[in-house]
Length: 80
Image (cartoon, rainbow, N blue to C red; front, side):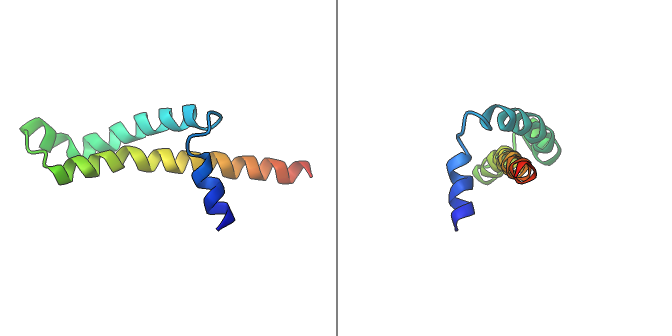
């Protein structure tokens, strides 16, 4: 539970956020285009699709923060 609290507390950390935002923008846009591009082009976006589209950006952000935290923890372990 402590690691989950650490992760949640790190989501807005200015040390991790810039990289995570770039990852979310690039990866999220690619995945959004793949999954929702045709529906967007045809004007067939529903509330459910928009919610899914939002998660398309949130997930890469979360994964990037997790990766940065994991890397930081590994680096600290090596220093000890």
